[in-house]
Image (cartoon, rainbow, N blue to C red; front, side, top):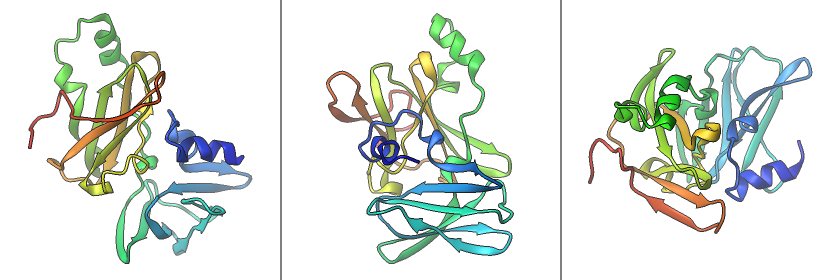
Length: 204
């Protein structure tokens, strides 16, 4: 994978992190890519136990190529500033199908926008978490930021849902009610702003 692809992610310009991060077919096996700017070590849980990922050059991208059986969805073990945490990989959960709601939204006739946008408690498979969606049609990149990622927009970049102008990311294992905002990079001015969610269920 060319470094320029990672550069878009690292520089905060990536509109579809799922094409880079998570698990992808690689020959007869698979390749896992994880981007954790504050991590010193990353491992993934496989049928053979925890396997360490290798840092890609001098970046904060960690990768593993393997053919070992991998649970779906898989879990990561991440060490950040000496603290070890285990959680499901965010990029094992691609955007869900909200095409009907997005169509109504773009037609201006969606009367239940609060069911589409904001922070929505969801369970995908057997994994509970929060699905974030925000309308940001002029954005080059949007991220979810909060206490859970040190308010660092590099950690949880969202996925653009095409011409709808809506961005989505499901963060597994995140408690409902966690403090968050959206970090938005304007595609025209390149300015980066942190904004509160206009569809938030509660405010601090």
